[in-house]
Image 1 (cartoon, helix red, strand yellow):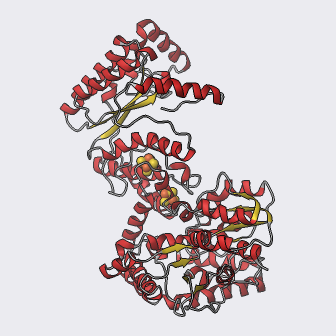
Image 2 (cartoon, rainbow, N blue to C red):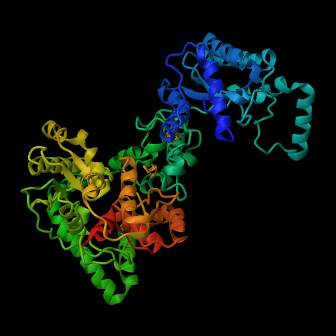
Image 3 (tube, rainbow, N blue to C red):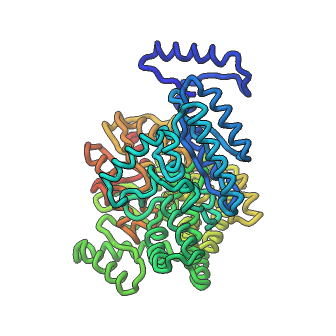
Length: 618
Ligand code: SF4
Ligand code: SF4
Protein backbone atom coordinates (compact mmCIF):
# COMPACT_ATOMS: atom_id res chain seq x y z
CA UNK A 1 0.00 0.00 0.00
CA UNK A 2 1.37 3.40 -0.90
CA UNK A 3 0.53 6.50 1.12
CA UNK A 4 0.85 10.02 -0.22
CA UNK A 5 0.19 13.32 1.51
CA UNK A 6 0.49 17.00 0.73
CA UNK A 7 3.29 17.52 3.25
CA UNK A 8 5.66 15.57 5.45
CA UNK A 9 3.60 16.11 8.62
CA UNK A 10 0.47 14.58 7.09
CA UNK A 11 2.49 11.77 5.61
CA UNK A 12 3.96 10.91 9.01
CA UNK A 13 0.44 10.89 10.50
CA UNK A 14 -0.75 8.54 7.78
CA UNK A 15 2.19 6.28 8.41
CA UNK A 16 1.44 6.16 12.14
CA UNK A 17 -2.24 5.39 11.54
CA UNK A 18 -1.32 2.66 9.07
CA UNK A 19 1.15 1.10 11.50
CA UNK A 20 -1.52 0.99 14.17
CA UNK A 21 -4.02 -0.50 11.73
CA UNK A 22 -1.75 -3.36 10.67
CA UNK A 23 -0.38 -3.88 14.17
CA UNK A 24 -2.81 -6.65 15.08
CA UNK A 25 -2.77 -8.40 11.73
CA UNK A 26 -1.19 -11.74 11.14
CA UNK A 27 1.13 -11.14 8.18
CA UNK A 28 3.63 -13.29 6.37
CA UNK A 29 6.27 -10.66 7.07
CA UNK A 30 6.33 -7.76 9.49
CA UNK A 31 4.88 -4.65 7.82
CA UNK A 32 7.36 -1.88 7.18
CA UNK A 33 7.39 1.36 5.23
CA UNK A 34 10.09 2.32 2.80
CA UNK A 35 11.08 5.84 1.80
CA UNK A 36 13.82 4.66 -0.52
CA UNK A 37 13.02 5.67 -4.10
CA UNK A 38 14.75 2.63 -5.60
CA UNK A 39 12.83 0.24 -3.35
CA UNK A 40 9.57 2.04 -4.07
CA UNK A 41 10.21 1.79 -7.77
CA UNK A 42 10.93 -1.94 -7.42
CA UNK A 43 7.65 -2.43 -5.53
CA UNK A 44 5.80 -0.53 -8.24
CA UNK A 45 7.39 -2.72 -10.87
CA UNK A 46 6.17 -5.78 -8.99
CA UNK A 47 2.71 -4.22 -8.76
CA UNK A 48 2.69 -3.41 -12.48
CA UNK A 49 3.91 -6.89 -13.25
CA UNK A 50 1.08 -8.71 -11.44
CA UNK A 51 -1.26 -8.78 -14.40
CA UNK A 52 1.37 -9.79 -16.98
CA UNK A 53 2.79 -12.35 -14.57
CA UNK A 54 -0.56 -14.12 -14.35
CA UNK A 55 -0.62 -13.97 -18.13
CA UNK A 56 2.85 -15.41 -18.40
CA UNK A 57 2.02 -18.30 -16.08
CA UNK A 58 -1.28 -19.10 -17.76
CA UNK A 59 -1.90 -22.48 -19.33
CA UNK A 60 -1.41 -22.66 -23.07
CA UNK A 61 -4.55 -21.92 -25.00
CA UNK A 62 -6.03 -19.72 -22.29
CA UNK A 63 -6.39 -15.98 -22.26
CA UNK A 64 -6.16 -13.43 -19.46
CA UNK A 65 -9.11 -11.39 -18.28
CA UNK A 66 -8.79 -8.39 -16.02
CA UNK A 67 -11.89 -6.84 -14.50
CA UNK A 68 -12.30 -3.56 -12.73
CA UNK A 69 -14.99 -3.55 -10.06
CA UNK A 70 -15.64 -1.06 -7.28
CA UNK A 71 -17.06 -1.51 -3.79
CA UNK A 72 -18.01 1.13 -1.23
CA UNK A 73 -14.81 1.71 0.74
CA UNK A 74 -16.45 0.85 4.07
CA UNK A 75 -17.32 -2.63 2.67
CA UNK A 76 -14.03 -3.17 0.86
CA UNK A 77 -12.54 -5.69 3.28
CA UNK A 78 -15.63 -7.94 3.36
CA UNK A 79 -16.19 -7.56 -0.37
CA UNK A 80 -12.60 -8.52 -1.10
CA UNK A 81 -12.97 -11.75 0.84
CA UNK A 82 -16.29 -12.45 -0.87
CA UNK A 83 -14.78 -11.80 -4.29
CA UNK A 84 -11.89 -14.18 -3.69
CA UNK A 85 -14.34 -16.84 -2.50
CA UNK A 86 -16.51 -16.35 -5.57
CA UNK A 87 -13.53 -16.82 -7.87
CA UNK A 88 -12.43 -19.89 -5.93
CA UNK A 89 -15.92 -21.40 -6.03
CA UNK A 90 -15.80 -21.32 -9.82
CA UNK A 91 -12.35 -22.88 -9.96
CA UNK A 92 -10.31 -19.72 -10.61
CA UNK A 93 -7.64 -20.64 -8.09
CA UNK A 94 -5.03 -18.63 -9.98
CA UNK A 95 -7.06 -15.41 -9.58
CA UNK A 96 -5.24 -12.41 -8.16
CA UNK A 97 -6.55 -9.09 -6.87
CA UNK A 98 -4.91 -5.71 -6.77
CA UNK A 99 -6.19 -2.20 -7.15
CA UNK A 100 -6.70 1.18 -5.56
CA UNK A 101 -7.81 0.68 -1.98
CA UNK A 102 -8.72 4.27 -1.26
CA UNK A 103 -11.20 4.19 -4.16
CA UNK A 104 -12.57 0.73 -3.36
CA UNK A 105 -11.42 -0.30 -6.82
CA UNK A 106 -10.24 -3.87 -7.36
CA UNK A 107 -8.73 -5.48 -10.44
CA UNK A 108 -9.56 -9.15 -10.57
CA UNK A 109 -7.34 -11.12 -12.93
CA UNK A 110 -8.14 -14.64 -14.06
CA UNK A 111 -7.14 -16.92 -16.92
CA UNK A 112 -9.84 -18.43 -19.05
CA UNK A 113 -10.13 -20.97 -21.83
CA UNK A 114 -13.00 -20.87 -24.31
CA UNK A 115 -12.07 -24.06 -26.05
CA UNK A 116 -15.04 -26.12 -24.83
CA UNK A 117 -18.67 -25.41 -24.02
CA UNK A 118 -17.94 -26.36 -20.41
CA UNK A 119 -15.24 -23.65 -20.28
CA UNK A 120 -17.63 -21.02 -21.62
CA UNK A 121 -20.44 -22.16 -19.28
CA UNK A 122 -18.16 -21.90 -16.27
CA UNK A 123 -17.22 -18.37 -17.25
CA UNK A 124 -20.87 -17.40 -17.76
CA UNK A 125 -21.78 -18.70 -14.28
CA UNK A 126 -18.86 -16.83 -12.77
CA UNK A 127 -19.82 -13.55 -14.46
CA UNK A 128 -23.40 -13.88 -13.21
CA UNK A 129 -22.16 -14.39 -9.66
CA UNK A 130 -19.63 -11.57 -9.96
CA UNK A 131 -22.26 -9.09 -11.14
CA UNK A 132 -24.65 -10.21 -8.39
CA UNK A 133 -21.95 -9.78 -5.76
CA UNK A 134 -20.89 -6.32 -6.89
CA UNK A 135 -24.26 -4.82 -7.80
CA UNK A 136 -26.80 -6.53 -5.58
CA UNK A 137 -24.84 -7.55 -2.50
CA UNK A 138 -22.51 -4.57 -2.11
CA UNK A 139 -24.13 -1.83 -4.19
CA UNK A 140 -20.85 -1.37 -6.03
CA UNK A 141 -19.99 -0.48 -9.62
CA UNK A 142 -18.95 -2.81 -12.42
CA UNK A 143 -16.39 -0.35 -13.72
CA UNK A 144 -13.92 1.87 -11.92
CA UNK A 145 -11.26 3.27 -14.19
CA UNK A 146 -11.37 1.00 -17.24
CA UNK A 147 -13.85 1.38 -20.06
CA UNK A 148 -16.98 -0.76 -20.31
CA UNK A 149 -16.03 -3.23 -22.99
CA UNK A 150 -17.86 -6.20 -24.44
CA UNK A 151 -17.34 -8.21 -21.29
CA UNK A 152 -19.40 -5.93 -19.07
CA UNK A 153 -21.72 -4.36 -21.67
CA UNK A 154 -24.47 -7.00 -21.18
CA UNK A 155 -24.59 -6.12 -17.47
CA UNK A 156 -24.92 -2.35 -17.72
CA UNK A 157 -28.70 -2.54 -17.40
CA UNK A 158 -28.40 -4.70 -14.30
CA UNK A 159 -26.15 -2.11 -12.74
CA UNK A 160 -28.04 1.04 -13.68
CA UNK A 161 -31.63 -0.20 -13.93
CA UNK A 162 -33.99 -0.21 -16.93
CA UNK A 163 -34.86 3.49 -16.80
CA UNK A 164 -31.29 4.81 -16.85
CA UNK A 165 -30.38 2.18 -19.42
CA UNK A 166 -33.21 3.33 -21.71
CA UNK A 167 -31.95 6.92 -21.47
CA UNK A 168 -28.45 5.76 -22.38
CA UNK A 169 -29.78 3.87 -25.38
CA UNK A 170 -31.82 6.89 -26.45
CA UNK A 171 -28.83 9.23 -26.22
CA UNK A 172 -26.63 6.80 -28.11
CA UNK A 173 -29.33 6.54 -30.79
CA UNK A 174 -29.41 10.32 -31.19
CA UNK A 175 -25.65 10.59 -31.56
CA UNK A 176 -25.15 7.42 -33.57
CA UNK A 177 -28.43 6.44 -35.27
CA UNK A 178 -26.77 3.80 -37.46
CA UNK A 179 -24.82 2.23 -34.61
CA UNK A 180 -21.46 2.92 -36.22
CA UNK A 181 -19.58 4.09 -33.15
CA UNK A 182 -17.86 1.25 -31.33
CA UNK A 183 -20.71 -1.20 -31.91
CA UNK A 184 -21.37 -3.68 -29.13
CA UNK A 185 -19.30 -1.81 -26.60
CA UNK A 186 -20.83 -0.14 -23.50
CA UNK A 187 -24.38 -0.82 -24.68
CA UNK A 188 -25.05 -4.26 -26.05
CA UNK A 189 -28.50 -5.83 -26.10
CA UNK A 190 -27.10 -9.36 -26.42
CA UNK A 191 -27.07 -10.85 -22.89
CA UNK A 192 -24.38 -13.31 -24.00
CA UNK A 193 -22.16 -10.77 -25.76
CA UNK A 194 -19.39 -11.46 -23.27
CA UNK A 195 -19.10 -14.96 -24.71
CA UNK A 196 -19.09 -13.93 -28.37
CA UNK A 197 -16.24 -12.84 -30.66
CA UNK A 198 -13.65 -13.75 -28.10
CA UNK A 199 -10.09 -12.85 -28.85
CA UNK A 200 -7.88 -15.88 -28.51
CA UNK A 201 -4.13 -15.88 -28.03
CA UNK A 202 -2.91 -18.59 -30.39
CA UNK A 203 0.47 -20.15 -29.82
CA UNK A 204 3.06 -18.73 -32.18
CA UNK A 205 6.73 -18.80 -31.21
CA UNK A 206 7.94 -19.78 -27.76
CA UNK A 207 9.99 -16.58 -27.44
CA UNK A 208 6.80 -14.51 -27.20
CA UNK A 209 3.97 -16.90 -26.31
CA UNK A 210 3.79 -15.51 -22.78
CA UNK A 211 2.87 -12.05 -24.04
CA UNK A 212 -0.47 -10.78 -22.80
CA UNK A 213 -0.37 -7.65 -24.93
CA UNK A 214 -0.15 -5.27 -21.97
CA UNK A 215 1.91 -2.74 -23.92
CA UNK A 216 4.45 -1.83 -21.23
CA UNK A 217 7.22 -2.44 -23.77
CA UNK A 218 5.95 -0.07 -26.41
CA UNK A 219 7.57 3.18 -25.32
CA UNK A 220 11.05 1.60 -25.26
CA UNK A 221 11.02 0.57 -28.89
CA UNK A 222 13.02 2.55 -31.45
CA UNK A 223 10.61 1.60 -34.24
CA UNK A 224 7.46 2.70 -32.40
CA UNK A 225 7.02 5.77 -34.63
CA UNK A 226 8.16 4.12 -37.84
CA UNK A 227 6.63 0.68 -38.12
CA UNK A 228 5.58 -1.49 -35.18
CA UNK A 229 6.04 -1.65 -31.44
CA UNK A 230 7.10 -4.94 -29.81
CA UNK A 231 3.50 -5.63 -28.77
CA UNK A 232 2.27 -4.93 -32.27
CA UNK A 233 4.85 -7.31 -33.72
CA UNK A 234 3.41 -10.07 -31.54
CA UNK A 235 -0.19 -9.08 -32.25
CA UNK A 236 0.41 -9.11 -36.00
CA UNK A 237 2.17 -12.45 -35.79
CA UNK A 238 -0.77 -13.90 -33.84
CA UNK A 239 -3.21 -12.48 -36.34
CA UNK A 240 -1.26 -14.06 -39.19
CA UNK A 241 -1.47 -17.41 -37.40
CA UNK A 242 -5.17 -17.00 -36.66
CA UNK A 243 -5.93 -16.12 -40.25
CA UNK A 244 -3.91 -19.01 -41.65
CA UNK A 245 -5.49 -21.51 -39.25
CA UNK A 246 -9.05 -20.32 -39.83
CA UNK A 247 -8.63 -19.41 -43.51
CA UNK A 248 -10.97 -16.55 -42.60
CA UNK A 249 -9.47 -13.84 -44.80
CA UNK A 250 -6.79 -15.12 -47.19
CA UNK A 251 -6.25 -11.68 -48.75
CA UNK A 252 -5.54 -10.10 -45.38
CA UNK A 253 -3.28 -13.01 -44.43
CA UNK A 254 -1.28 -12.55 -47.63
CA UNK A 255 -1.02 -8.80 -47.11
CA UNK A 256 0.22 -9.22 -43.53
CA UNK A 257 2.76 -11.81 -44.62
CA UNK A 258 4.02 -9.47 -47.33
CA UNK A 259 4.46 -6.55 -44.92
CA UNK A 260 5.83 -8.51 -41.98
CA UNK A 261 9.47 -8.73 -43.15
CA UNK A 262 9.97 -4.96 -43.32
CA UNK A 263 7.51 -3.81 -40.69
CA UNK A 264 8.45 -6.36 -38.06
CA UNK A 265 11.88 -7.75 -38.89
CA UNK A 266 13.99 -5.29 -40.88
CA UNK A 267 13.06 -2.38 -38.65
CA UNK A 268 13.62 -4.22 -35.38
CA UNK A 269 16.96 -3.15 -33.93
CA UNK A 270 17.12 -6.44 -31.97
CA UNK A 271 18.47 -4.38 -29.09
CA UNK A 272 16.26 -6.14 -26.55
CA UNK A 273 15.16 -2.94 -24.84
CA UNK A 274 11.60 -4.23 -24.82
CA UNK A 275 12.71 -6.92 -22.38
CA UNK A 276 13.80 -4.26 -19.89
CA UNK A 277 10.21 -3.01 -19.65
CA UNK A 278 8.36 -6.29 -20.10
CA UNK A 279 7.13 -7.68 -16.78
CA UNK A 280 7.72 -11.20 -18.05
CA UNK A 281 11.04 -10.46 -19.73
CA UNK A 282 10.03 -10.98 -23.35
CA UNK A 283 12.71 -9.86 -25.79
CA UNK A 284 10.99 -9.43 -29.14
CA UNK A 285 14.46 -9.16 -30.64
CA UNK A 286 14.71 -12.93 -30.06
CA UNK A 287 11.66 -13.41 -32.27
CA UNK A 288 13.24 -11.17 -34.89
CA UNK A 289 16.46 -13.16 -34.81
CA UNK A 290 14.51 -16.40 -35.17
CA UNK A 291 12.86 -15.13 -38.35
CA UNK A 292 16.09 -13.68 -39.69
CA UNK A 293 17.65 -17.09 -39.10
CA UNK A 294 14.84 -18.79 -41.00
CA UNK A 295 15.24 -16.39 -43.91
CA UNK A 296 18.83 -17.47 -44.49
CA UNK A 297 19.32 -20.40 -46.83
CA UNK A 298 21.89 -23.03 -45.92
CA UNK A 299 24.54 -21.53 -48.21
CA UNK A 300 24.17 -18.12 -46.53
CA UNK A 301 24.68 -19.61 -43.06
CA UNK A 302 27.78 -21.41 -44.33
CA UNK A 303 29.07 -18.30 -46.08
CA UNK A 304 28.68 -16.31 -42.86
CA UNK A 305 30.48 -19.04 -40.95
CA UNK A 306 33.39 -18.84 -43.40
CA UNK A 307 33.48 -15.07 -42.95
CA UNK A 308 33.57 -15.47 -39.18
CA UNK A 309 36.46 -17.91 -39.50
CA UNK A 310 38.35 -15.41 -41.65
CA UNK A 311 37.33 -12.33 -39.74
CA UNK A 312 40.88 -10.98 -39.80
CA UNK A 313 40.44 -10.43 -43.56
CA UNK A 314 37.30 -8.39 -43.08
CA UNK A 315 38.87 -5.69 -40.96
CA UNK A 316 41.34 -4.34 -43.58
CA UNK A 317 38.57 -4.66 -46.20
CA UNK A 318 36.23 -2.52 -44.10
CA UNK A 319 38.97 0.06 -43.55
CA UNK A 320 39.68 0.07 -47.30
CA UNK A 321 35.97 0.58 -48.03
CA UNK A 322 35.85 3.58 -45.69
CA UNK A 323 39.04 4.98 -47.21
CA UNK A 324 37.67 4.67 -50.76
CA UNK A 325 34.31 6.12 -49.73
CA UNK A 326 35.96 9.18 -48.22
CA UNK A 327 38.21 9.55 -51.25
CA UNK A 328 35.16 9.63 -53.54
CA UNK A 329 33.36 11.96 -51.13
CA UNK A 330 36.24 14.44 -51.04
CA UNK A 331 36.63 14.34 -54.84
CA UNK A 332 32.99 14.41 -55.91
CA UNK A 333 31.13 15.64 -52.84
CA UNK A 334 29.04 13.91 -50.17
CA UNK A 335 26.15 13.31 -52.54
CA UNK A 336 28.24 11.12 -54.86
CA UNK A 337 28.78 8.28 -52.40
CA UNK A 338 25.17 8.49 -51.24
CA UNK A 339 24.13 8.15 -54.89
CA UNK A 340 26.50 5.22 -55.50
CA UNK A 341 25.22 3.22 -52.53
CA UNK A 342 21.60 3.99 -53.43
CA UNK A 343 22.25 2.82 -56.98
CA UNK A 344 23.79 -0.44 -55.75
CA UNK A 345 20.79 -0.96 -53.49
CA UNK A 346 18.32 -0.50 -56.32
CA UNK A 347 20.30 -2.75 -58.70
CA UNK A 348 20.62 -5.66 -56.29
CA UNK A 349 17.12 -5.12 -54.88
CA UNK A 350 18.38 -5.85 -51.38
CA UNK A 351 19.19 -3.66 -48.40
CA UNK A 352 22.71 -2.34 -48.90
CA UNK A 353 24.63 -0.13 -46.46
CA UNK A 354 23.94 3.47 -47.34
CA UNK A 355 26.69 6.01 -47.23
CA UNK A 356 26.11 9.23 -45.36
CA UNK A 357 28.37 12.27 -44.89
CA UNK A 358 29.05 11.47 -41.23
CA UNK A 359 30.59 8.08 -42.02
CA UNK A 360 33.76 7.66 -39.97
CA UNK A 361 37.19 7.63 -41.51
CA UNK A 362 39.07 4.34 -41.27
CA UNK A 363 40.89 3.65 -38.02
CA UNK A 364 44.65 3.37 -38.32
CA UNK A 365 44.52 -0.30 -37.38
CA UNK A 366 47.61 0.14 -35.19
CA UNK A 367 47.29 -0.31 -31.46
CA UNK A 368 49.34 1.87 -29.11
CA UNK A 369 52.30 0.19 -27.44
CA UNK A 370 51.38 -1.50 -24.17
CA UNK A 371 52.98 -4.10 -21.93
CA UNK A 372 51.63 -7.23 -20.41
CA UNK A 373 53.94 -7.01 -17.46
CA UNK A 374 52.30 -4.97 -14.70
CA UNK A 375 48.99 -4.65 -16.59
CA UNK A 376 45.86 -4.40 -14.46
CA UNK A 377 43.62 -5.64 -17.28
CA UNK A 378 43.61 -6.91 -20.83
CA UNK A 379 42.19 -4.26 -23.13
CA UNK A 380 40.28 -5.81 -26.03
CA UNK A 381 39.47 -3.04 -28.54
CA UNK A 382 36.27 -4.07 -30.31
CA UNK A 383 36.51 -4.71 -34.04
CA UNK A 384 34.43 -1.59 -34.62
CA UNK A 385 37.10 0.48 -32.80
CA UNK A 386 39.80 -1.21 -34.85
CA UNK A 387 37.96 -0.45 -38.07
CA UNK A 388 36.14 2.86 -37.64
CA UNK A 389 38.13 5.95 -36.77
CA UNK A 390 37.11 9.55 -36.35
CA UNK A 391 34.00 11.16 -37.75
CA UNK A 392 34.46 14.03 -40.19
CA UNK A 393 34.99 17.14 -38.07
CA UNK A 394 35.95 15.19 -34.95
CA UNK A 395 39.33 16.04 -33.34
CA UNK A 396 41.67 13.32 -34.57
CA UNK A 397 44.83 13.71 -32.51
CA UNK A 398 44.15 10.56 -30.52
CA UNK A 399 42.49 7.22 -31.25
CA UNK A 400 39.99 5.60 -28.90
CA UNK A 401 42.56 2.95 -27.99
CA UNK A 402 45.09 5.66 -27.16
CA UNK A 403 42.56 7.46 -24.97
CA UNK A 404 41.81 4.39 -22.85
CA UNK A 405 45.47 3.40 -22.64
CA UNK A 406 46.37 6.97 -21.58
CA UNK A 407 43.82 7.30 -18.77
CA UNK A 408 44.62 3.83 -17.45
CA UNK A 409 48.33 4.64 -17.40
CA UNK A 410 47.67 8.00 -15.74
CA UNK A 411 45.73 6.23 -13.00
CA UNK A 412 48.54 3.76 -12.42
CA UNK A 413 46.33 0.90 -13.66
CA UNK A 414 47.86 0.23 -17.10
CA UNK A 415 46.10 -2.01 -19.59
CA UNK A 416 47.59 -4.38 -22.11
CA UNK A 417 46.44 -4.77 -25.73
CA UNK A 418 47.49 -8.20 -27.04
CA UNK A 419 49.33 -8.27 -30.37
CA UNK A 420 46.89 -10.71 -31.93
CA UNK A 421 43.53 -8.98 -31.40
CA UNK A 422 42.94 -8.77 -35.17
CA UNK A 423 40.32 -11.25 -36.27
CA UNK A 424 38.67 -11.41 -32.85
CA UNK A 425 35.04 -10.36 -32.77
CA UNK A 426 32.28 -10.68 -30.18
CA UNK A 427 29.98 -12.26 -32.78
CA UNK A 428 27.14 -9.77 -32.25
CA UNK A 429 27.21 -8.65 -35.92
CA UNK A 430 26.37 -12.26 -36.79
CA UNK A 431 23.90 -13.09 -34.01
CA UNK A 432 21.83 -9.96 -34.60
CA UNK A 433 21.31 -11.06 -38.20
CA UNK A 434 20.46 -14.63 -37.30
CA UNK A 435 23.75 -16.20 -38.43
CA UNK A 436 24.02 -18.63 -35.56
CA UNK A 437 26.93 -20.71 -36.78
CA UNK A 438 29.04 -17.65 -37.49
CA UNK A 439 28.13 -16.26 -34.08
CA UNK A 440 29.23 -19.47 -32.40
CA UNK A 441 32.54 -19.45 -34.29
CA UNK A 442 33.25 -15.83 -33.35
CA UNK A 443 32.19 -16.13 -29.70
CA UNK A 444 34.15 -19.36 -29.13
CA UNK A 445 37.27 -17.88 -30.65
CA UNK A 446 36.92 -14.71 -28.55
CA UNK A 447 36.51 -16.66 -25.31
CA UNK A 448 39.44 -18.96 -26.14
CA UNK A 449 41.65 -15.92 -26.77
CA UNK A 450 40.41 -14.13 -23.67
CA UNK A 451 41.34 -17.22 -21.69
CA UNK A 452 44.85 -17.16 -23.01
CA UNK A 453 45.33 -13.38 -22.82
CA UNK A 454 43.94 -13.14 -19.30
CA UNK A 455 46.21 -15.95 -18.05
CA UNK A 456 43.25 -18.19 -17.42
CA UNK A 457 41.08 -15.52 -15.88
CA UNK A 458 43.71 -13.79 -13.73
CA UNK A 459 43.25 -10.45 -15.50
CA UNK A 460 39.89 -8.92 -16.36
CA UNK A 461 39.07 -8.26 -20.01
CA UNK A 462 38.02 -4.66 -20.71
CA UNK A 463 36.06 -3.78 -23.85
CA UNK A 464 35.61 -0.25 -25.20
CA UNK A 465 32.30 -0.77 -27.04
CA UNK A 466 29.32 -1.49 -24.80
CA UNK A 467 27.19 -3.60 -27.19
CA UNK A 468 30.17 -5.94 -27.66
CA UNK A 469 30.62 -6.29 -23.89
CA UNK A 470 26.95 -7.12 -23.53
CA UNK A 471 27.05 -9.58 -26.41
CA UNK A 472 30.08 -11.38 -25.03
CA UNK A 473 28.62 -11.61 -21.55
CA UNK A 474 25.50 -13.20 -23.05
CA UNK A 475 27.27 -15.69 -25.34
CA UNK A 476 27.58 -18.64 -22.95
CA UNK A 477 24.81 -20.74 -24.59
CA UNK A 478 26.70 -20.91 -27.91
CA UNK A 479 30.03 -21.89 -26.36
CA UNK A 480 31.53 -25.35 -26.34
CA UNK A 481 31.69 -27.02 -22.94
CA UNK A 482 35.42 -26.23 -22.72
CA UNK A 483 34.80 -22.57 -23.45
CA UNK A 484 31.84 -22.46 -21.09
CA UNK A 485 34.13 -23.55 -18.27
CA UNK A 486 36.60 -20.82 -19.29
CA UNK A 487 33.86 -18.24 -19.65
CA UNK A 488 32.70 -18.93 -16.10
CA UNK A 489 36.12 -17.90 -14.79
CA UNK A 490 36.53 -14.79 -16.95
CA UNK A 491 35.65 -11.24 -15.93
CA UNK A 492 34.49 -9.46 -19.09
CA UNK A 493 34.03 -5.81 -18.19
CA UNK A 494 32.66 -2.89 -20.07
CA UNK A 495 35.07 0.02 -20.07
CA UNK A 496 32.42 2.12 -18.30
CA UNK A 497 32.50 -0.22 -15.29
CA UNK A 498 36.28 -0.60 -15.33
CA UNK A 499 36.91 3.13 -15.65
CA UNK A 500 34.38 4.00 -12.96
CA UNK A 501 35.58 1.41 -10.45
CA UNK A 502 39.31 1.21 -11.13
CA UNK A 503 40.48 4.31 -12.96
CA UNK A 504 38.38 7.22 -11.74
CA UNK A 505 39.31 6.99 -8.04
CA UNK A 506 43.00 7.27 -9.02
CA UNK A 507 42.78 10.23 -11.38
CA UNK A 508 42.97 13.96 -10.77
CA UNK A 509 40.72 16.24 -12.76
CA UNK A 510 42.72 19.08 -14.35
CA UNK A 511 40.07 20.66 -16.53
CA UNK A 512 36.35 20.84 -15.82
CA UNK A 513 33.72 21.23 -18.48
CA UNK A 514 30.54 23.21 -18.06
CA UNK A 515 28.03 20.97 -19.72
CA UNK A 516 27.99 17.69 -21.61
CA UNK A 517 25.23 15.51 -23.02
CA UNK A 518 25.28 11.73 -22.79
CA UNK A 519 23.64 9.05 -24.87
CA UNK A 520 23.62 5.84 -22.80
CA UNK A 521 23.38 3.07 -25.39
CA UNK A 522 20.95 0.17 -24.92
CA UNK A 523 23.61 -2.20 -23.66
CA UNK A 524 24.70 0.32 -21.02
CA UNK A 525 21.08 0.45 -19.87
CA UNK A 526 20.78 -3.35 -19.91
CA UNK A 527 24.06 -3.77 -18.00
CA UNK A 528 22.80 -1.22 -15.47
CA UNK A 529 25.78 1.06 -16.14
CA UNK A 530 23.97 4.32 -16.86
CA UNK A 531 24.67 5.56 -13.33
CA UNK A 532 28.39 4.84 -13.70
CA UNK A 533 28.55 6.55 -17.08
CA UNK A 534 26.84 9.59 -15.59
CA UNK A 535 29.18 9.53 -12.59
CA UNK A 536 32.24 9.57 -14.86
CA UNK A 537 30.83 12.52 -16.80
CA UNK A 538 29.81 14.38 -13.62
CA UNK A 539 33.32 13.95 -12.32
CA UNK A 540 34.57 16.04 -15.28
CA UNK A 541 31.63 18.41 -15.80
CA UNK A 542 29.39 20.78 -13.90
CA UNK A 543 26.26 19.78 -15.74
CA UNK A 544 25.52 16.40 -17.30
CA UNK A 545 22.41 15.95 -19.40
CA UNK A 546 20.86 12.62 -20.21
CA UNK A 547 17.81 13.55 -22.28
CA UNK A 548 14.48 12.41 -20.85
CA UNK A 549 13.70 10.84 -24.19
CA UNK A 550 17.07 9.10 -24.56
CA UNK A 551 16.54 5.58 -25.79
CA UNK A 552 17.70 3.18 -28.44
CA UNK A 553 19.00 5.11 -31.46
CA UNK A 554 18.04 2.19 -33.69
CA UNK A 555 21.49 2.04 -35.25
CA UNK A 556 22.08 -1.46 -33.93
CA UNK A 557 25.44 -2.03 -35.56
CA UNK A 558 24.28 -1.87 -39.15
CA UNK A 559 20.51 -1.10 -39.12
CA UNK A 560 21.40 2.58 -39.31
CA UNK A 561 23.34 1.93 -42.52
CA UNK A 562 20.74 -0.42 -44.00
CA UNK A 563 17.55 1.33 -42.85
CA UNK A 564 18.50 4.90 -41.98
CA UNK A 565 14.83 5.77 -41.54
CA UNK A 566 14.82 3.60 -38.40
CA UNK A 567 17.55 5.66 -36.77
CA UNK A 568 15.87 8.85 -38.00
CA UNK A 569 12.57 7.95 -36.34
CA UNK A 570 14.18 6.56 -33.20
CA UNK A 571 16.29 9.64 -32.50
CA UNK A 572 13.82 12.37 -33.37
CA UNK A 573 12.71 13.22 -29.82
CA UNK A 574 16.14 12.85 -28.27
CA UNK A 575 17.67 15.03 -30.98
CA UNK A 576 15.08 17.76 -30.37
CA UNK A 577 15.94 17.74 -26.66
CA UNK A 578 19.66 17.84 -27.36
CA UNK A 579 19.30 20.76 -29.73
CA UNK A 580 17.25 22.76 -27.24
CA UNK A 581 20.38 23.64 -25.22
CA UNK A 582 24.07 23.95 -26.06
CA UNK A 583 26.63 21.57 -24.56
CA UNK A 584 30.43 21.49 -24.60
CA UNK A 585 30.47 17.91 -25.82
CA UNK A 586 28.36 14.86 -26.66
CA UNK A 587 29.40 11.43 -25.47
CA UNK A 588 28.48 7.77 -25.60
CA UNK A 589 30.20 4.37 -25.59
CA UNK A 590 29.59 2.79 -28.99
CA UNK A 591 30.91 4.11 -32.28
CA UNK A 592 27.92 3.12 -34.41
CA UNK A 593 25.44 4.67 -31.97
CA UNK A 594 27.64 7.78 -32.00
CA UNK A 595 27.28 7.88 -35.79
CA UNK A 596 23.50 7.64 -35.41
CA UNK A 597 23.33 10.42 -32.84
CA UNK A 598 25.70 12.61 -34.87
CA UNK A 599 23.50 12.10 -37.90
CA UNK A 600 20.39 12.97 -35.89
CA UNK A 601 21.71 16.06 -34.15
CA UNK A 602 24.49 17.44 -36.31
CA UNK A 603 26.61 17.42 -33.10
CA UNK A 604 29.63 15.15 -32.98
CA UNK A 605 29.20 12.28 -30.54
CA UNK A 606 32.31 10.45 -29.39
CA UNK A 607 33.42 8.09 -26.68
CA UNK A 608 33.24 9.36 -23.10
CA UNK A 609 36.88 8.16 -22.86
CA UNK A 610 37.97 11.26 -24.79
CA UNK A 611 36.19 13.44 -22.25
CA UNK A 612 37.99 11.74 -19.39
CA UNK A 613 41.33 11.85 -21.17
CA UNK A 614 41.03 15.58 -21.82
CA UNK A 615 39.79 16.38 -18.33
CA UNK A 616 42.75 14.61 -16.73
CA UNK A 617 45.48 15.57 -19.17
CA UNK A 618 48.40 17.33 -17.46
S1 SF4 B 1 6.08 -8.15 -24.80
FE1 SF4 B 1 5.19 -6.14 -24.35
S2 SF4 B 1 3.00 -6.43 -24.57
FE2 SF4 B 1 3.89 -8.48 -24.36
S3 SF4 B 1 3.85 -8.95 -22.16
FE3 SF4 B 1 5.83 -8.01 -22.56
S4 SF4 B 1 5.51 -5.81 -22.15
FE4 SF4 B 1 3.47 -6.76 -22.37
S1 SF4 C 1 14.24 -5.61 -29.84
FE1 SF4 C 1 14.22 -3.34 -29.85
S2 SF4 C 1 13.49 -2.76 -31.90
FE2 SF4 C 1 12.97 -4.95 -31.59
S3 SF4 C 1 10.90 -4.91 -30.77
FE3 SF4 C 1 12.28 -4.94 -28.97
S4 SF4 C 1 12.58 -2.74 -28.45
FE4 SF4 C 1 11.69 -2.82 -30.54
